[in-house]
Each structure stands twice: as structure tokens, then as C-alpha cells.
Image 1 (cartoon, rainbow over the protein chains, first blue to last red):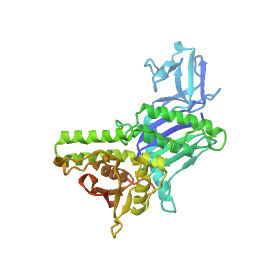
Image 2: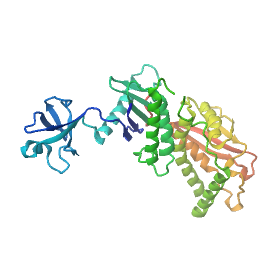
Image 3: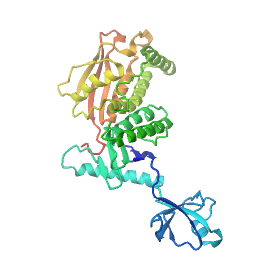
Length: 219
Length: 180
């Protein structure tokens, strides 16, 4: 999956749509016997690995599932506290899945508004008048592409650095937004987008872009 | 090889008769509901405004025009691109005020009123007032406060339909980043 996420930010900087379409790459599931040789700690409502790296489990990874059942923050699926459960030798052997903790929706909201502010700062820093604002943010693991419409809505796509054709994808997402979100009379402007058709068509567009992009420059 | 069909060339053919009938049904229902021409005009303007705020994104997504830097550019884009795209007509732009902040759009034929005759008891009804609302709503989303009103109407016996557009001010609050 070369396109990781899509974010749509409204004029005020609020996140109105978010889609993650990447398969988590660094997840490891292992069976453990008592005592657990990894040091776990509670942080931000999640159980993280504080110390003890082995076999693909890194420091900072969170406990995602115990015995196949997804963990809910610091509680197991049955409502017991994870740390307590894992401290009890009677529960072993136990199979735990570790992985990079996913962002919660609140965190995504916060990050989107922060990006909105950074975007504004970016335009103000510009030596020339009328800057387009941040168009791309590049790191070694992903590239963030941003497109701001004349009406102030921002479409943000996070993709693999080698993925091409994201500019046309951003325009396509704008079209899909103007069709399936705006033409839906029950959708209010600036509010979170909860339109099935928008979801479906967006996923289709992402698939097309991925296929077209990896074959070379654009389509 | 392009896999994405270009959305610009794909056009959904729909009967314009259905459109005219729909609009007519809308106006007559409003007349029944409000019984007062002024109220109907206001409602049409409000409805047009709600259409305009959504239509502008569709227009920008499809037409790829950039930001207009003065009212003349705006007038050109409205007449030559927008009206053409949505109503299939190209009104002419005339009667510029000396300060360059007012102009008239002259529509030779208005597709909304193809088969319409205004009865005597609705003499102050502005039948196509929806269009004024659309223009107002759309321009407001690109930070321009304008006033649009009909000064001539073929339904009232004039030769052409004339919409007068006046630029009020640039909307400075909530500007998208980068536009100063």
C-alpha cells in the first residue's frame, strides 16, 4: 500500500475526514512464558515496551492484542488491566502482539489543527506574496502532500516517497469531495464527512492512483 | 496509458425540460407556502445561496481557474466559464461603473424561464432570483462579498434579462493561509 493516509481539513483547521489505508508493517506476535523478559510501562493510556528489544519487538511498541483479542488501551478485551494480567504467572503461556501504536482519533484531530497552523506559518514565512503554502513535507519514510483550495479546504495525502502522481490524486480527491460530500444535501459544510459514497469513491481513487503511480511517472 | 477517465469530458445528459419543470414546481410551491412575493424572493435567494456555497467547489475542482485578482477577471470567469458550464449560455458583460465595482450580465435567453409567463398577481416576483443567490454564495466562499440583483427580466416584458453585480468588499476574516 503506497498511499498511507488521507486527511481533509476544513477552513478553521478542524479535521473533517480521515482515512488510513496502510497495513501495519512492524507487528510481531510472540508466545511468552512467565516471567516476561520485556519491561512494560503504562504511558498515555497504553501499555508500551520500556526496555527489552528482541525478535522484532522494539522499545516504544505497544501491546496490541493478548491471545488474539485486541487490547483496549490499558485494559484487555475482558476488562482486566493488562499489566496485572501479565504479572500473574497463572495466565501464562500467553501470546502477545506488539506493534507501533496507532494514533487515536483525538490525536489525529490535534495533529491536523497543528498542521493547519504550520501551514499558515509557512505562507507567512514566504518572501514572496501569495505563497501556496506547504505543498510537500518529505521524510525518509513518507511524503506528505498538501493541496489548499481557493476556499480554504486542505486535502492532505501521506504516501510512500517513491509514489508518483499524488498531485493529480489531490485534484481527484477535490472532485470527489465536491461531488459526493457537497452534492449530498444532508451534509453540512465544515462538518465531519460521514458519506458512504465519498468513502467508497475515495478508496477507489486511491487504488487507481497506487496502480498508476508505481509504474512510472504519472499517468 | 491513462486509466482515469477525464471527468471534464464526461457529461451526464439530462433533459433540460425536467430541470425547467423542477424549478417551476419549486417556485410555485414557494408561492403557495409564502403567499407573498417578497418572501418568495427572499427564500429563492437563500436557496440560491446554499447552492452557491457548494457549487463553487465543484466549479473550482472542474475548471481549474486560479484566483481572480480583480473584479473584471471575476466577471469574465463568471460569464465565460461558469455560466457556460452550468447553464450552457454565455451572458455578455456590459455597463461597467466608473469605479470598476459594478457590472451587468446580459442574458439573451434564460434557461430557467423557457416556458414561463408571470401572472398579474405575481408582478413583484423575481422568478430567477435563485441565480442571484447562487452568485452571492459562490463568491462569498472565495472571499468576495457581492450583491446581485435583477434589473431587467424578460418575464416582466423587458427585452433581455439583466443581472447587476456589485462588489461590496473583500472578506478578510477566515482567509485561507497565503492570501493577503
